[in-house]
Amino acid sequence: MDIRDLKLFLHLAESCHFGRTAKSMHVSPSTLSRQIQRIEDTLGHPLFLRDNRTVKLTFAGEQLKQFAQQILLQYQQLQHSLNQQSPSLSGELRLFCSVTAAYSHLPPILDRFRAEHPLVEIKLTTGDAADAVNKVQSNDADLGIAGKPEKLPDNVSFTKIGEVPLILIVPSLPCTVRTLVMQENPDWDTIPFILPEHGPSRKRIEYWFRHHQINNPLIYATVSGHEAIVSMVALGCGIALIPNVVVENSPEPVRNRISLLENISLVKPFELGICVQRKRLNEPLIKAFWGLL
Image 1 (cartoon, rainbow, N blue to C red):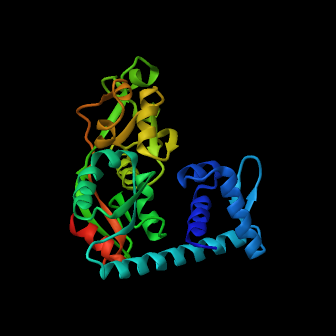
Image 2 (cartoon, rainbow, N blue to C red):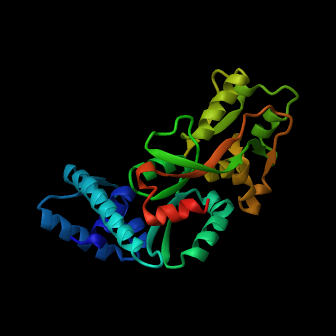
Image 3 (cartoon, rainbow, N blue to C red):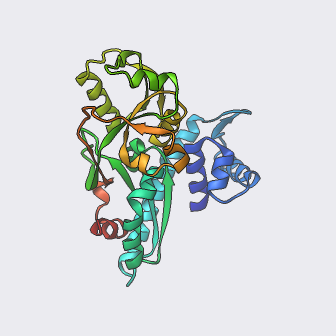
């Protein structure tokens, strides 16, 4: 096994989808399958349980995942150590953020970093912002853009890059949901809400429910990622408390199908920032990135 094999395996262990990993890692599905088979032959144990619809890690796969994470982290640290002796930084820096943050907050930061360190390769992965801290803790990302949780893990450092207020959005098209919301005194218990699965937004929404004495909210769906929530509101499925930056960066056809509900007492904004494992702050690439924030 080499470093490339471990990277392929780790991506597949996270995605549990051969097609998705093959596309992300720029190999054909057949090549990926052969390389995984070669690793399994080398170890003498199957790493994945496969059928036509699902891919799951075996016990051996879970063990190799932990091993691969440790080896790749040590390899990165070796690269960083060697780069310290070089006049210019080079290597790979893995960033994780939401699709919205990739539009709204990341570009000026990356522009500054690339201007000073053009040889560093940026690997960007997008997903639910609420997963950013976990991605950093598990070494799936070097740095992540996250909303600051109520309790930040002791091993994670966080630096603020902005504040994100929440707004209440409703469908703008004529539908049952809009009719219920636009009443003079809405009965919130009868109005369907679309919620994020977890994260600082979810905590503030739960506070909003308590503030408005909504003891048994009608939950239409619980969704991973704020971008999908905006689309569901636009389709008339329900209403949502959502970070305003997500709406601002939504496609125009989606924005045209939603309205902001005014004169509603909302909750305080949450802090948006960059997170990293505290013990890695002195690694050259991370230190250089952190210093530009």
